[in-house]
Length: 368
Image (cartoon, rainbow, N blue to C red; front, top):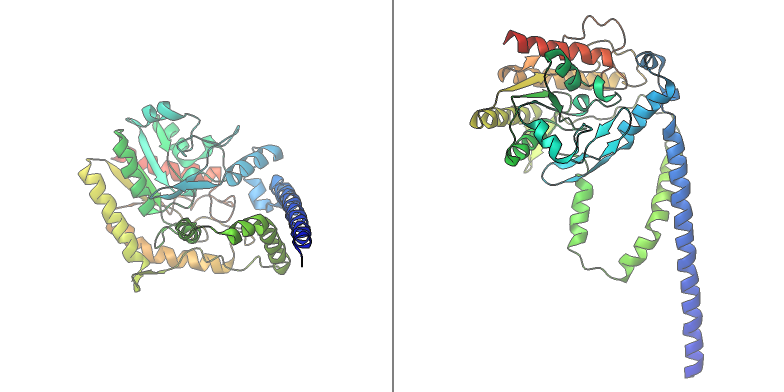
């Protein structure tokens, strides 16, 4: 092969490769657009898919208002935060507002730090945040109206006692101080921070690995591969699995290859909390929350199946004695006299349920 023939052949290869890459990019863009369009269209009308017992708990709102709450609550997502793992992403709407500090409030930046000083800080998971509810329907907001004082909602989805302790420590470093600190815990208790940890390990590994051409090539086709995987999974999951357990938590924890009971982990976290509050001269109250499927009426087996109810009962039975040991306020019976469905999904309370829980907490304040 002479030099001219070689140049021509290389040119042909270059043209074919370039066209292939351009075609892949076009396919990727179309794939992402189609997936996002379908994904968003499925998410926009959440109300229609709700069981009737849940719709009844939204009777004070219109269909569009319920969809606005659900889409803003669940559509916000999380973002990375050092040590804590993740935090709520900022979002704003008529009913659901999360500020730049990832706390549920329409007050932002320095003004929010001013609000923290001398107010009641209320920590917890998504039940505290108020997933599925408007800002004024959350437990901290209702508690504030009952006590006629400022209560700051510091709840974040999926947070448990250890993360809440760390978040309290982080806020104290800023120099702001609360008048009282409340923690609503129970259903989220787990061995350790779990959300996105596998992804973080993968990213950490990639960050230390030098990039080569194959990495860049994979990045080009990755969206298409991801989309095809999701499509395949979607078709594979067409068989109804409404009553398949979600495996909410693992009762047996494992650290350095040693198995430890969940109750031991919870005990350690609550002991850390007591020491933290004592060393900083803080007035702290831990509250044991009602468990879906165990306390109050949960009439939707579509949202919470028998297996999940059994798991909830098992977790509650294991950790209740630990909360009692640490003098937690037990409000698990606060929903006993609510003669209707007390939830808006599998585990999150309705507005009426929140009123009863907040009332039980307020009652303990006044007694003290």
